[in-house]
Length: 413
Image (cartoon, rainbow, N blue to C red; front, side):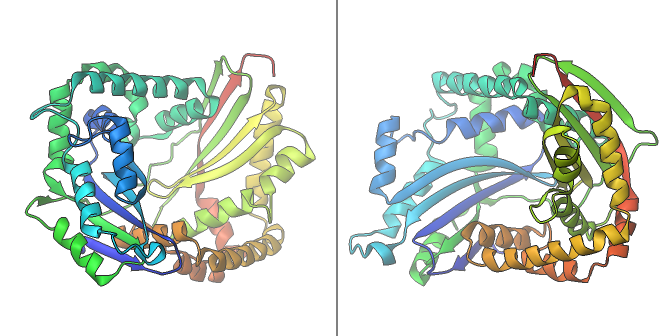
């Protein structure tokens, strides 16, 4: 693992973002535990035992925003505490005590509202109920449900088996003591990776290192690597009916002989299909034949998936399918592609310049370099500039249609 403390120093912003990341190995058994934790650990601590007290303490310690989130990265889960604090250079507050703020942060992370060996039962039950409502709302939303089904259909490695939607029945089996033991295992007994962004003075950096450099075990991290899903021999066609107003069509492609460098081609393909510069999906599916409400595309770098998503008029289902086949065929036509690829290259160049002043882009770029999960923006652009239409056609020919998923809404549109 690289350095445990990392920072970007810039005076361009009026705040400091502090991210404390606790990696742990992905395990579908603990999916429920993790989703409960992010709903349990953000309202109170043992020092501030009510939501009002904790909210006031945030203000008193110059914390402008606070959150806890869980995300996936390869074989890891990341639990990330984010504290956004005021920049003292802007406040010019002679009483601003960074040590006081960091002590509050330490208390929030390591002294949650709990007993000596378990969380309070009422708090856990409330978190369980909120998680159950979240899952139910996901099944009721057509886009969420279609994504859940798509993951089930294309995952030949059981990578998405830790999705909370696969573990609804396990929520109410978790005890307060079990959940607290899990918290202690992955957070309470570990020290985080620390990422700081903003006007980080040397004295503040030293305080951060001192505060989080105590003798806890370091968080574990499995180095990122791609794990491509294998294309099927025959296309899997799945058609379902649901109690929704609209209908959704998804085409999911896997790629033959997938490699890390294909990420830039995926990015180019998504821009060709969905950006305002080229609008290929909208042009073919909506403007020309009025087949869809909306159409978009996305990709999964880790597993080599490319997805075309359309909310369609159900009576246009067969025509929409054929039109998507037509689009993929046109993407193998060099004369059709050449001006569009040049347009995308120019848009990417402009985006790169704009993102140099974007704090979220700086953070994403920095994090990507640290965990080596993809190409930073400038590297991606340098690779993109050299891609020829002929090379892009070769990439498109390696795409293999794996799954067509159609969810037909049974209500009147």
